[in-house]
Amino acid sequence: MKRASSKILQQAAPDALRDSILNAWKTNARVTAFLVEGMPAELMAAKVPGSPRKTLRMIAAHLHNVRCGWTRTLGKEFGIAVPASVDRFKVTAEELVAALGLSAVGILNLLELGCERGGTLPASKAYVWRNLPLDVGHVLSYFVAHEAHHRGQMVMLARELGYPLPSAVTNGLWDFTKWARKEPRR
Image (cartoon, rainbow, N blue to C red):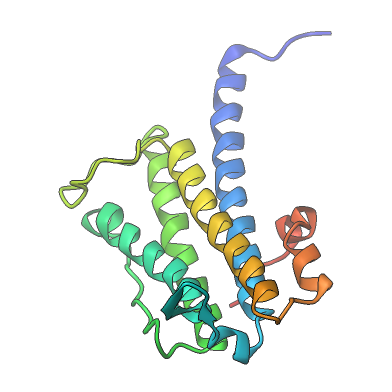
């Protein structure tokens, strides 16, 4: 069996890796939107035990607003559109799902920028905190870990507050094969 030339392999690996990074983010974003869609209105308004000024709506809105903040910090200088933040006190689940779609594109554009620049996002002037390595693997891991943390928090709080989410929602969060195949909403 003849081996492919290393030049062909060098070209194929970056394209495959780029696609893998971008598709992993899209899957994560779909899972987050699915959870927010599955939250009843009364749960969105429920107060977080131990933090009476915080609601589940605020936690869910935080996901979108953080995406917007990072898109502004890392991408605005490079022409990436920054979606508007949402009002964490008033946003409805329907409005938030639409907004999450926009902020998911912002993060996707950041990851694409990093892939186009050899696997690392360029350091913007606005990025002063420097707590996150800017290679696309770390950037992707950071955003997925952040969202998974808050998704788990929301599922646990729903149960604790007496609004356990249907098993179709909680089990659906783990159906990554389904979410990887699914076309994004528009």
